[in-house]
Length: 135
Image 1 (tube, rainbow, N blue to C red):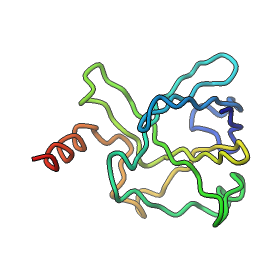
Image 2 (image 1 turned 120 degrees about the horizontal axis):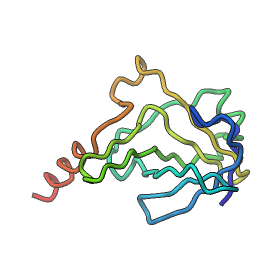
Image 3 (image 1 turned 135 degrees about the vertical axis):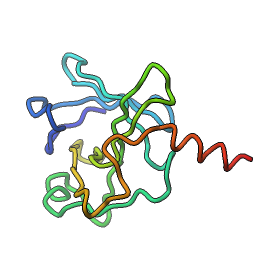
């Protein structure tokens, strides 16, 4: 689905339209709609942690067209390393998508309010937790 960036991704303020492509139930690919670059690998935060909740600022919710009846799809940018365990996830600046109106944007959370979320958390931290659950 194609989305209009009403809250731009930091550093990519000039890009207005993105295409969100579902890879599987956990991963997505986000590409600039016209040229297909840049390209971001996104991950569903619920696949890694069950404590990922935050309050969406009113201004952001309004721009995205969110309400009590319209919840966003929340995804996080993943910085991929050649060794998958060395990849990192940005939990401090989630991307929010409103599939009902085709609007999306990045919200930067206040680190002081959400100290449990990091800007570049190692994927390995969550892989260990998953393997411990299986033991």
